[in-house]
Length: 201
Image (cartoon, helix red, strand yellow):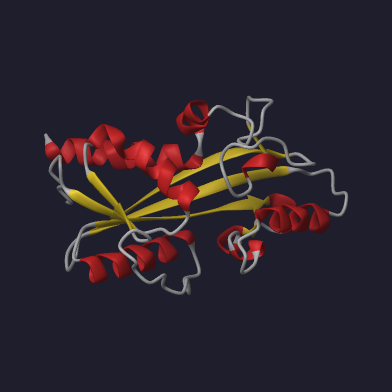
């Protein structure tokens, strides 16, 4: 069981500014001192895992080992049913070395090749690692459908082409506060924060 006291330092093992900003917002109720891997100039490990959980653990372990601090990582991606759940764990790689998600979204549309089945879901797996100690993972999913062309300037990644179930706006069009309440990352964070609150009590 992982116990982190309020005010503890926690490294967010990411260099993605949009993701770091979103994670900081989601962690704000827990009163941790948040540092990012980018801020600490930690190296980005190669993601060689074959699942979201494996890659999340790989990144959190690397950050914990380098920083000597508890570390939290997020591995997430878009899974498109008509593409056999691609891009999946390769979601970031579809954006290329420049991490241009306009390229990635164009590839999704091109690979669908007019297929009317637009069902898709986002997956987020969080990994929390204590240096030399415990590890835990938490998974969240958000189901919905794809839309083209991309819509909205909020969020990051594939957000402008994803409309969550029960909504008509994309994640890219939504107010961040609304997205944070329903996203795959929000669901994973709810599991994480519930666990940490229970362990702190």
